[in-house]
Image (cartoon, rainbow, N blue to C red):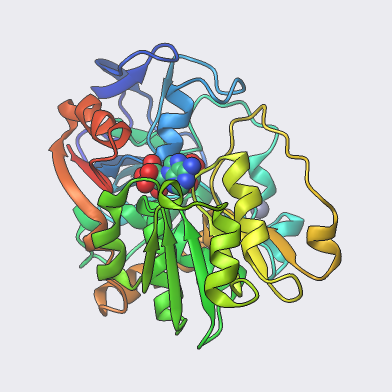
Length: 358
Ligand code: APR
Ligand code: ZN
Ligand code: ZN
């Protein structure tokens, strides 16, 4: 391409400080160095994790920063030694990379790549998709089917895969089981879809915003509950509804109270509770050890347990084969310049996912 080897000047949404709106600026994007890939971002979703950072919940993320981690785009140019992608390829930049060499990448049970640790964050979660162009390491890019609509499958870069995978990979939901999902944003609703796909017979959706219930039902929830309408703590309500508690519970909010409530909602012997929501970095939980002693399991899940470079292309193929319909999560599509409006919709609880188009 004509831009290959040159610095590209383009628009990006810069977060200058916590608590301030993003500002669209012209930035310079350097050509990819050896082992790097420069991507033209075509579409990006707005995820609540971006909002957590903007609120200043993660002191280890330094400002100014370019946020965004749920994108899709086209390879513009590649650095020396890059073999897995070439200019023109459609790709998903991976907010959880897969180097293929570290001990976790080599372990079939793990999807957490150690490349995530101990690196300077000049980017956000490797990818910084709130920019027209971004440069990422080759191990943080997955080539996908050229037939994939980038304005839709960008959600597979975080929210959809995170929620759906938490159900099918981390919890391994069994047919006929009962599930409870706390938080019905893009992530929690993807858990609902995963539980349904896994054959769960009862899917109880929990949120304090009742406007989320219609979509939850459309995606497979059998019951919807607002804890604020209940006379008792939500864990007691769920235990009564199901006899002994659900088989699987999921927390897709990021609050200590709902993490404990989700844990206590699954049955004391074989229940599995999966934590997905990202807590404020200063959070600490104290809990009654009896909750775990009787057999319950408490697990965490990052990006749905998918080994990202291996699985992202397969997830895109499953999307194209209509195995799931993640498009139902997209409530708004906005031009990139309206990124702050997208955040306002998220804060007001009016959107599930807003997709920004460049
Ligand atoms: N009880 C029940 N539901 C709640 C509560 C609560 N106390 N507080 C908030 N919620 C609901 C909101 O009403 C909203 O519907 O949780 C949902 C969160 O959805 P989004 O804001 O759209 O967030 P999402 O992008 O789905 O991310 C959820 O997963 O990846 C992480 O960092 C992300 O922690 C975040 C979580
Ligand atoms: Zn995310
Ligand atoms: Zn690795």
